[in-house]
Image (cartoon, rainbow, N blue to C red; front, side, top):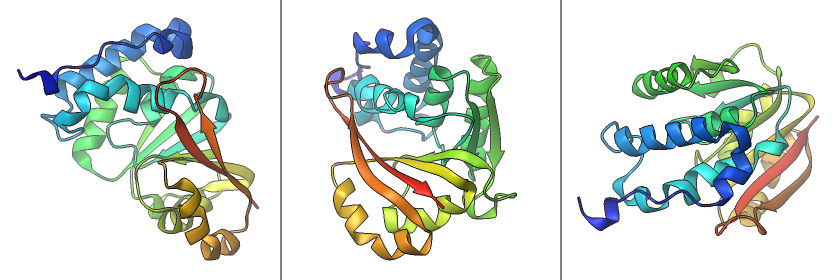
Length: 210
């Protein structure tokens, strides 16, 4: 196996972020490293940064969630499964349309004994009832102007969006002003997480849905 495929060693911050749930985080990361490329969940180039770029990038956002929360386009379980491990007090729904990814998510829920997770095979646009979640997230799904019409209807009145984004987050907000107004989002801002704890920060677009 070439060096580029080797899995990143666990950063010290992992223990801090997961606490007593670190063993589940390790088990999920190991499963993703072992099966992720073969099952089309992650690419081989992600192995040397699996913890830093994917697991911890997701886990740092855990304090933003409460009540009933949903991850749209959960895919490999990033961020949904990671957040469900970090926040066992939150009731999670992982929404994913692709059957092979649904199979993976269900396998991991069972193997990790996650009792706070429901896996739902559906497009977000087809989820019913609407407006039932306290917080909705998505990571690496689509541009904000495309994502807002998909995720906003899932959030209850007064609930929140907490969308994990990249370096271009502020520009995406500027490009999505029409959708922000149409779906009555307020307090739309970018929050940078992990500046003191992670080697790579996480940007989250947060907004209140009215």
